[in-house]
Length: 282
Image (cartoon, rainbow, N blue to C red):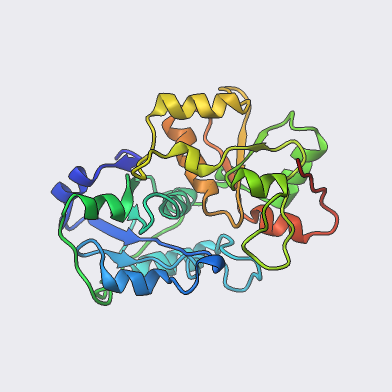
């Protein structure tokens, strides 16, 4: 299964018993009152289920969207009808922004049969394809057995070590806007300073996308990564605000044939909130 699938492909596969479609939309605090589930009820791809990123997380951690325990992930994803034999297509209501987080989470827990819908719901709508409204239909619970692949996850200790070593161990790529990276624009979460980890490079996730919200071709994406210093030898770590759009960069790197990044789960929200971590601005 490819990591990125077209709307035409999904329209052909929709309704097959081994396929689960998940709406994974997450709106930021500065986008209130928009809410993923509320918008899902207005319009979604037929048969889709709503995957709440706040539920597919460690709910006891004060930081947002931190990776859940394998047991919690298995419980929540299984309640959505996903087993180890299920093919999953993730999409979001913005185009291509939060869906890669589910792609990454499933792969983190050993499930490779997962793809992101290229262009998401906006492209699906623009093509006049069928839509449904209303609450998600209940899913038959499924058994999911997680198999954590630790190399796909980076923690704050890993990132501190990379920063201390001056970036020689790995290249940190930040998916936030350049203005937030430079410290010129505020973070969407109140009280959190903007800026970046020393030695990190800025690659806003939007640069990987075409005007219609689809992902650029692998060659163009590779060029963007190489312009920031990425190559076939040095490991990559991607980061963002809360570990969501960092997964867009992870998807892009995989499609471009670069080393698969580790996603820094705590991302800038964790880094900026720790007094001992160095912060840089332009």
